[in-house]
Length: 146
Image (tube, rainbow, N blue to C red):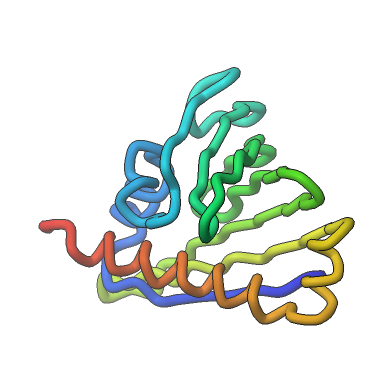
């Protein structure tokens, strides 16, 4: 399953990227994230592996993140894996001028088991979660003092 979501953020591109790349900010805008732990490498660097703990409904889900590309603002890619889910996220940030930035996020999912059935029957659930994350990031960025 593949899809793309995008959002315009009312802040200059350098501010958006600085806030996006700082893993300490994740808890401020990913509201179901409980914690982040770097397992190997340096935050933001290609090859860095991290463990992310999420609250998904009434259960905790552990996800592994590996950064595969960091050529910001043009491209920032990471692979996320958990039970029965592999997700490649490709992020791009575009300077729109007038202190506005467009964030484009392309997603590729490969699922198995029950998650594959959910992805086939209700693919909009995945896209809605991505859109919600973008809205939360936009709100976080725009709430930061200039």
